[in-house]
Image (cartoon, rainbow, N blue to C red; front, side, top):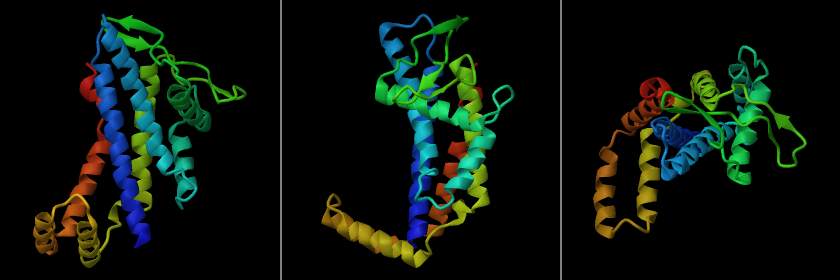
Length: 234
C-alpha cells in the first residue's frame, strides 16, 4: 500500500511541475518586442520558472529511493540524444546545470537575444558549469527556443513511455482503502470545521474512488501531452 501511495504522490507532483512549466512557457512566448522594463523582468522569470519545473519533474523519478530510477534515467538520456548533439547525458546535464545556474547562482537567462519579427530569440547560455566551475556543458541549440523545443519532445516521450512500461497509471488503492484513508484525513484535519467533517464523512463512501483515479490519470496524460509551442507559438 505504501508503494501505491508513494506512486500517487509522485504522479500528482509531476502533474504540478508540468503545469508549472507549461504555464511559464506559455507566458514567456506570448511576450513580444519591444519589451517594457516590466516585461523584460517577466521574460526572465517565466523562462527561469520553466526550467525549474522541467528539472523538478525529472528529478522526482531520478531519486535513489525510486526503484525504477535507472530505467528512467537511461530512457531520458536516449530521448535527449539529437542529431549533431548525440550525447543525451551531456544534454541532460546541460539542462540541470542551466537550472542550477538560474536558481542558485542568479544567471539572467534572458540577457542576450536576437529579434525575429517581434519575437525575442534568447541565445542559449553556453557553456554552463557546475558550482565549482570545473565541469562545463554546452547547449544543444543556439537559441533557447531550440533547446526548449527538443526538451519538450524528449520529456513528454520519456514520461509517457516510462509510465506505460511500469504501469504506473494503473496503480491505485482499492475502494475500501481509499475510503479508510479519506476518513482518516478528514477526521485529523485541523482546517475543516466539525460540520464539514460530519458532512464529508457521511458521503465519502458514496464516491467511486476508482472513477476519481481514472479521471485524475486522464488529466495527467492530457497535461503531459500538451504541446505549448505548437499551440501558442504562431
